[in-house]
Length: 166
Image (cartoon, rainbow, N blue to C red; front, side):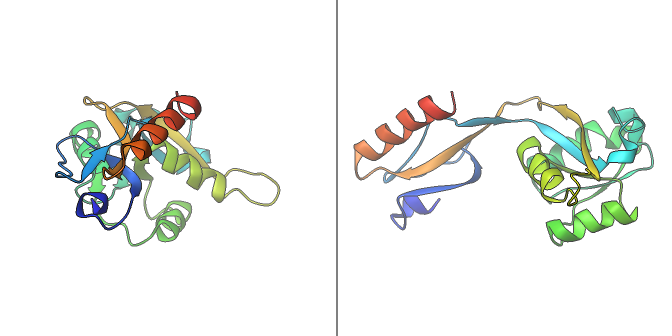
């Protein structure tokens, strides 16, 4: 929310505008992406872990108080999944999945796609896969927070979004 405080011109880090007021000096851009929820799992589990009921007794790590956390509680916990809201680091989570300490990492599809690609080996072998890709009950759209001192900035940013993200 730094643009609303006049400390930067544009801020972005996967931010939803829903319910967040930027004050008089900040404004939200158009949405540039709609996030879907997903689980990052071991590739070898892709035929077994396909839908929520397959996660009975499985450990799913999520970022505390995040949309992924809410989704995991609503979607997987009723089927007996163990939700762990602790993320020491993405590298640690990746290692825990590979070592079998946990079964899945709940994140947005873009973040999990990045992790799956980032940790492919030199031969292109994919140790990870995404499963149960879905939208939440509320649409999760990401926007940029923009300082509103110059209306050309938000206008040009929204034009850019229309061209490259529409």
